[in-house]
Image (tube, rainbow, N blue to C red; front, side, top):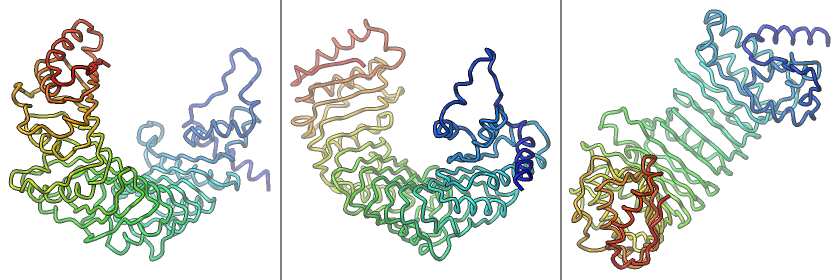
Length: 474
């Protein structure tokens, strides 16, 4: 029986050998030091290779013949079928399926730690389900699936009741069909990408079946079938919702209501047009938020109301990374001005996009709401097309933070043009307690020490109350 298995194993390997790039190469004829390493070390090295290359190591020597059957990390990607010119498409698909099937049959009974599969389901949905069922039986902990679907497809039920999973990443361009019962008692990371949520009840059931979840990412998913869903997970530390890109009509902004109640959250990232209404509850001051909201001008008032509601839920945060578009959405002219709260805990603010002329006014308004701000970072600098006069940055009412708390300003992507210099000179004049101005130069300016000295001299002529401010080029 052992002989039969051995022959079958070698048949599988030889049929796929031409897809591997591994060779025995020892030009000196000396000692093979790698093969003398302990199995645990070799298996650790193999865990970083694509699985088809891992199997290919069996031809190196007798020492390597069966080592591949014990590898804990499995990575299968059918993309090479479409780049390789060997054989025709049907034969390549058959070869891939046969190899994968035999691989799962012949490997040792040891547990699988991490399993990644990226393939087109169209060639055999039943094979994909069979493979996943086999992997689940091996007590997989990390499951990463990228499945390209052309017709309705349902993952096997065992995926949604796997007790050993700690990480599940699912990218699948179809409706997410869920069984009536789901349970992930030890799941800590859940990534959902491109899926379409079927209805409120099944989506809520999924989100409520992960009592130990720490990281949740929902990326480019379709919410159109939902009316209301709650993300209420006490263990949650990181939440990412990315609703970009937007391909629908502006009528699709009705969306659903997403209630987020996560008292232990430390990181929140939202990117999107607020096609869904985001309601935040019980966020602590330890949250670091990253917000980007492009403006659809046909729906700017509706987006503005939702943006304000989102930021009201962030009123306790201590650190934020906000795009200039998101700031603009907070101060649409048609909305009354006194709607934003005061952010008493926010000490660090990073602007994640280039500042443009029409962003200056909204930024001034926002700074009035940040009385304790200590660090202000212009991470992308100014728009190259921006034309700024010195009077443009003069504030009718200087923000309280400029008078009492703003200690550090960081300006990145600095080119040394007149607009940037004028902008920073005006800022230095009104930031009375500023201690540090850190300027990160562009590649062109980085080595030009003479230009840096000229810029520094121009800036120091307008230090205002911050006569001791240190200007540093980085």
